[in-house]
Image (tube, rainbow, N blue to C red; front, side):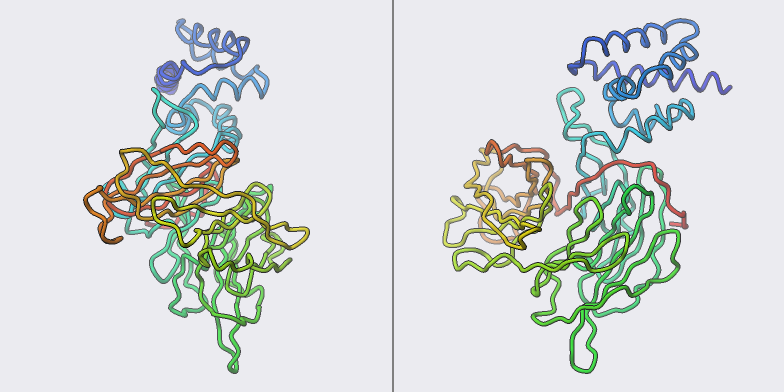
Amino acid sequence: MDRVMRQKRFKSINNCSHSDSHHDHDHATNNKYMIIRQCSNSSSSSNKSFILFSELSQDEMLAILTLLPLKCLLNSARYVSKFWATAISAYLPLKPPGLYVFKTRSTTNSYFLNIQDHVNGQPERIALGTPSRMGQVIATCHGILLLCTFATLTFAVNPILKCCFRIPSLPTYSGRLICNRSTIACVPRTAKFKLFVTDVLNVLGVNWYVFYVLTIGVDNTWKEIARKEAILECRFIWKPVCNGENDVYWITRDGVTVMDVDREIIIGEYPLPPPRVDSSQDGYFLWMRDRLSCIVLVKGISRISRTYQIYALDLDLGKWTLYHEMGPFDYGDTCGHVLGLMFRFWINDQIFFIALTTPPEIRKSYSAVTKSILFCYNVKTGQLTKTDDTVVGSFQAFLHTNTLVSLPSTPT
């Protein structure tokens, strides 16, 4: 029975890989791949293919795995054997990043959009279907999703393995929007995930930012790790930014506070970008390769000719400098009227943002939004590319790297 199931799975993998064979790859790697496919058509396809695959070097093995659509890797290939599961688990974090799209008003609540590996000339979509009753996605880290309701965190979820962790009650409740004062981060070189939350407490007439942490699978309750006096307006306007390694950047009106994920301490403080009379004060903070960036709208310009300035923070000097100016954008004839942009994240040289659009005949207010369209802008070439259309309703898109890390399961 096991052998029959293995042959069926392997046959499914071959079919999927054949559909993606138009990719250009090294000639030598293609020869090895063809040998494996020829063996798979023989009477002893499973055994011979398994032996050949296991004898390949890591680079050759990864080159072959790139021929498979992500859906096949997740749904079929990793079930062939323990060896394949181990190889794919090691390979997934190296696969080009894609987008996790969560739709707040749709029958399909979420899906993974594999934007860099094309299947039949189109981005590959994988429906993940995180139940809306579990909350909305507010952050991701190495494939683990952080969900919340308006006022509190609810679950950490791995949508690939279909496991989740129910988050204990928060230590305080100030009524402030939770999505702008919480995040999830991974301790470098480990499978340990931590949840961070900050809040404002008033002690004897003085406001304090209070930082809390909870390690998934280790802690049962939140613990306080730091306090910092709040001097200016105590509002959480910007979401915290993770650099993908060991730092979380908390942005408030008082400036930028940097926290070490592993040691759970504050390790640095920086000012906000200098105010400009011609720019919007409420920008978008994104991580740009090796530094923090802030994107602001230049005021005094019509909607058609809007431009945006990008400031970068030099972590050594502690100063912000103008890095790039982008726009106005040519969206083409398919987008209708663009009301505004929401910048989401920065991958290599490309900035991904959502354009809120209406048909050309509707130009009154944001309440008339009928479609959200995802674009990417290349800061090196100035090229603007439409990546994905969405249905009616708002949504959020995040950088998403698939992982097979399991979470302590709790009933959903």
